[in-house]
Image 1 (cartoon, rainbow, N blue to C red):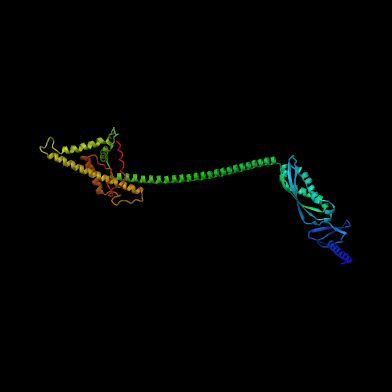
Image 2 (cartoon, rainbow, N blue to C red):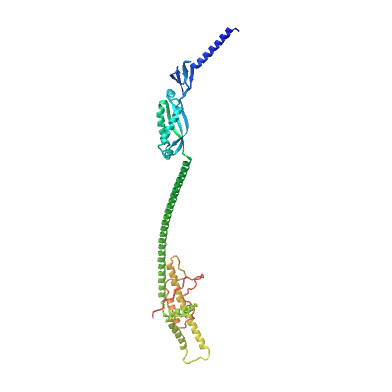
Length: 422
């Protein structure tokens, strides 16, 4: 191959490479949310928008593309002195966005560094007017102050600061320990206060409950006492009414029986053995009616003696037999009279029980009516004969009520009547 041909081939290859390079420099593709600055012969010529763009090769120069999206940059911790002379470390985060590529390119050499330094100086200026307590509790106030200063300063740079955040505020370790102790003491204080409030409320509620319980208990006791008193009153009224009726019935029966001093003397003789019972009875009180009873006994014996002729002494035992027969007859008559009187008393007691307890029925064998004339006359004759004759043996209790047939008595024995006056 000749040398001329080789030279021509090399020239063609060089031309092809030049054409390719020229085409590559002439055609530029700008992505979305990107912007490019075109300089022609060293001067600003235009800003490239996203899409396909043709520039003049070797005359126009396209600078590095700028990102138009919002950017986040975190700055390292910066030592800041507070108003109370405490050094704290503060980490900041800046959210910014390029809204003018030409100003961001030509107004400042490095807008990231400019934003960082401006943030540090502004932060020291703001924190210097606050104490530690306010610094820790006023993050929103610090953020707004930083954002206002940065937005005013970066506006001419084509930068818009959207948000400034304090990522961390770290006081010195000694201050942190003191703050922890203070916080622990404050929490213990609040816990003690809440506990005291709870105990107070609990005691108040307990006292209120005890008060209400005592009031209700007192009300219940009051009502119970009133009802019990009413019941006792009614019971006493009914009991007194029944006793009054019983006493009236007994008094009626005694008056219907028409007792005399002879029956009373006989009753005293019947009660003498009861008075003598008991180990502690050392003194006997003999009533005045006892002498009358003895007089009646003497009269009865005298009548039997008068039946014999004066000075006539029987030579055999016929007189003794007659005396014994008369004494037996007098004893039988006295017992009949005593039985009649006891029957009358039993009737009176049965009538009193029926009057005091209306629910009980009158026994069929008890006659609560007036005694017949024949019975009354027979009872009086028997008592007269008993008083003028021999008295029966002492020891029979005329006040004891006869058995009603079922093994129980119809009522308690009445008390002996009071002795007559005189």
